[in-house]
Image 1 (cartoon, one colour):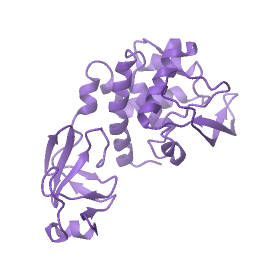
Image 2 (cartoon, one colour):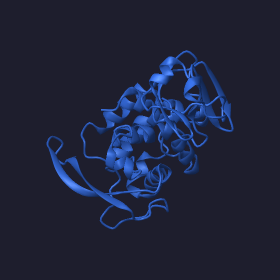
Image 3 (cartoon, one colour):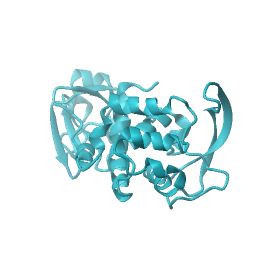
Length: 261
């Protein structure tokens, strides 16, 4: 099960991509639905096989290997999955799923599928996320009898409708940190003397920082899962930098990659 930190990091990563692809496809499917489906299908980015394949939606290859656009380049992986064909009983099967060069390609293929395949026409241009996911499910998209309520539960729990409509882009790019709040490092990170500055030495850190550090030839690294408290926030060249007691670290890269959540 994904931790709250992993959930926040995944949503922060996928939201800008979903907003970008929705705009590219005329904003026909709801961004909130896209994000919630990615959360559900990939277990908030914690499913090992899916993450390795950049496959956040669990889209099957299909018997005729249809191409709805150019994002999918015929790569695939095999894995077991559970299907519910009678509305009551789950059966475990093994099938081939689409693999991608990047998460961006995965999201683009999702929108290409919904906007191109005729069976998803009732998911497009709907007035609400509920109507949209109902149209997607009826295509059908998944066999789970509780799929619609699961997706709506994710949307409501995490307030994903903030990414729908004209304000979605601004919400996706909003600074995801609050001064005084504590967050978790999602990977090992160098500590710097300023945003985009020089890497610090061991002696520059606080005692707590030293206790959670490693050192390589380039400087001091705070270990993944270290908890840090934000003292200051700066946005530089599209990246979000945060000052913690020991120095500066990059919270989110210019590409939208989240390092601290």
